[in-house]
Image (cartoon, rainbow, N blue to C red; front, side, top):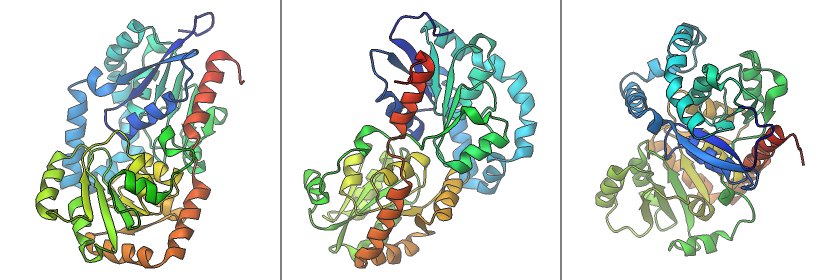
Length: 378
């Protein structure tokens, strides 16, 4: 599976867990910067390769969150549990990875970019894929115990703490690059005036705008968060991105009625246009959501973080004083009110996020991949 002597473009698999998701958004972001004359991106959805496994994991995850969130927190990144899982990795993963190996070999894949730990594990545990160049892209501001320490050509970490964690787990330091989390091109480049962005979406052009997002699944108590801001409607407007949570949209239509200052939006392929229109973003701190918010320098209020990676992303934001948390709908209203009436605080938060943003992570990751596969840094 060496790339030397192969004709261009090289087929490179971009592997993610499911769509829509942050992993998928990150894969798309990297693909946008891969020149078609050199690399032909081939998207691989693990939930389609393993149709029974994906729903099982998602169902188990959501059940744990709903009934015993402390258990998920314990399992998520616990060194003892990870050690106990070694037998599973060594005995089960090589067998399970055969299906993925069959697919990659059949498609004549010459390298793989993985935005999810499980696909990285599958590749590193399959002997037939031993020579396949693997590039692992972390999509949270932490490196949990399940990223493989060996068999990866390059790791792309969001920040120093995650890179340190990878080294502690045994990943070679020279293979770790601190690039940031990749975001799509629509979140980079010159930004239009907020009033113009609002007008294009049919929003009031000069009204303070709060964007509430629950990620691709529309998770979190988003409806109650929006309704908590009812006392401020007229002085501000609220837009809620519901992801693929159609039930939320139906509930919202009944609860919100005909309020002109409150809009609920079903899944959109172009969320950046709503981010550009916003003064303030409220949402779950998924890694890609945070990276997108930082790229556009939008002040961020953490709301409904999930146990595991989102709590670790919250710790990253706290460590750098980049966000505050509303622990409930009742706590959200006074925080939003403060930003509404304090433009200086809003501007300060925006500057702090801009200083930590890595909006060109996808471009930098793509450049490293091209250099590794072609031997040409130019």
